Image (cartoon, rainbow, N blue to C red; front, side, top):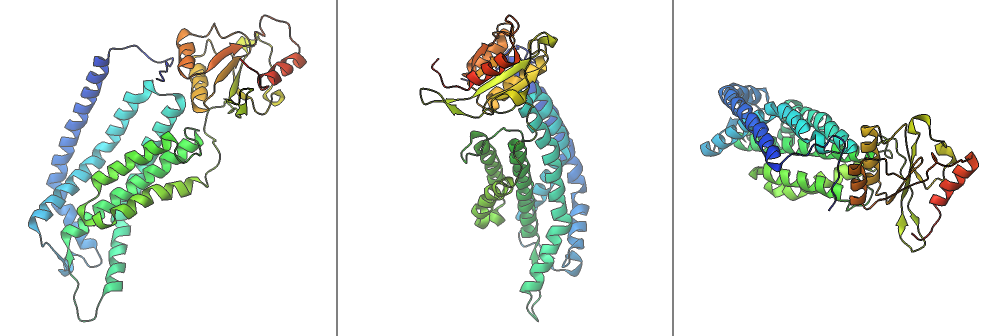
Length: 370
């Protein structure tokens, strides 16, 4: 089982994590309860104002309630939706704070961008749907389906059920698009269609869509589910190659002498200026590259290096100045857990020339038996 130890990890009993989660969850439930009470008090004027703003709104007597029980359910659905929107900023902050210490640098960056950018853009899109998109859709539908001499009546329950369902779909579609786009830019997923990260994102959002989809949209649930998967996948095909990942250059897989794929990453550690160096331009193209002044002294650099090893599925990490033993035990254990062999060139202890260093790098990409 993959078990990574990051520099900011602190050994704590499982009970402490559960207690922290319970405290954060209790606070969120309390704020959600207050928000629910507030919107319960304000919901009637809001619903009346929105209905009156429709092109064929309540002011003209075209909106009726045929199912009082259904209207009560829809009314509480709107209250719950508004309460969730109100609580979402605090929930996002609590999520980021709780998960921060246990994530790799690229995962932390992904979660921050999706939580802040994705949630903000998703909510903005859903609000725009209610204010502009849905009224325009109702007006267009009324114009297309109108029959001379026959009046049009709208069911208030269906109006709000469809509006709530579409707003949920828009929100989840935007989250999916941003989550997958940022994951591609951060090298968190590969181009394979069944990449585990991609499957987790799609699976989670499809499950949320299944929970949120109202009965009024059950007939098109499957169609909207397929679109929820296909549309983000079509868009990310036009996205640029990974551009937000760490400075580490990804290695190109090469076949070793036994026919297996070898992904070698070279860590150019300057050892605070004491280690002879070589530039990335002088290294083989297939060799991965990471560089820092002193990996054994810079905990953030080690986390970024471990992140690159995991993201690029590196199976051989080579340190320039030593054999890797000065690195912390937790870091070496994390490499072993990732099935990555650690070795070094020992340039601190031998006399080398630029030509010898280039030759040593070339040998790293030459197939050989271990």
